[in-house]
Image (cartoon, rainbow, N blue to C red):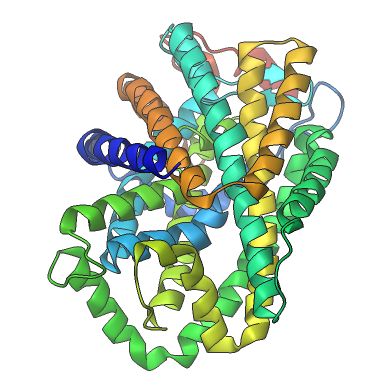
Length: 480
């Protein structure tokens, strides 16, 4: 197992360092320039769009709102990547990894805007509203269903199985750590028991469909984020005098001025970008699956909302984790990643905070499991409309949830990195040629905003578009 793990790490590191990170950075910079820095320039519009009301779906109930779609993607984003993933990046890459997370978060916001806008444009109708994502814009925008099939299979494996196992693995690890912190010894059967309970809770939600997933996510995401921020901020405020030194440490380590845990400059950058991407998912191709479910009047609106999610995740939640860890002056090292956040809270607030963090991790990871499930469901639906296939996916998804709770954390995390990289590569190859479509959509949005209008898009406004299933002018007249 150790040899397999080492091989996976070696191949994945090379793939990220020499192909994926340069491609993501260059493409994000290209989109930033071509779209006029849309990810920074239109932040007020991002906030305004969150308040939009959805239309009525074909089954007579309300479709998914912009905020609910944001919550589904945030449920997947704001997971253990923000707690364990950030700690892992600092443990391996040193404090400088944090700066590269911030910088890439700002730049890749442009890629997030492009992919989520495309997800909205090329969405299709279903009984409860809409579904879509990269597989759909690969088929309809590029005319390449074969590429959509590759993506759909990859994201189903990545989120439906691998990332899902990461979340349940973290839940089990947090509970075991909390038990041992209380002076007891975690029994050998605890992981299996946690997995069984998690499977039962997950099944109760996912068999209720996307509306139930959206409702649970909408309730959990704001609550868990607030609790975690308050806990982390308490420790940071108590150590406010250390913040200038922490900032200096981050900048010095980011450019190789100091050595931390044996990290070279390349390791610092790779760890920061990779963990940042695992956390905010920009350019990965996952968020558009959630964004496509939203009922909005213009595709650009949900592109902006999903970009706001990148900032909320990277600049607020991840930053809180980073400062929480670094003010505690931790002992860094590759094997200590998952422990850093727990130890930082415990040293700052006492043992009770370790148990509180366990609860937060439970909510974070459980909401991520729900978001991961929907990503898989949407893409299995793209591959096949057979109900038996969907039921089979649900069974395998729940099995992966259980196995993750009893598996090895190292191999699970490394396989997640590998799967995420392949998925991101397929998505980036697709959005590069479709960037021109987003330029046209943004121009239409901005022209309407300049006229003082609430932007409304219909496909006849850009008649050269092909493969657009929704956005019919007659349907828009009936809706309004």
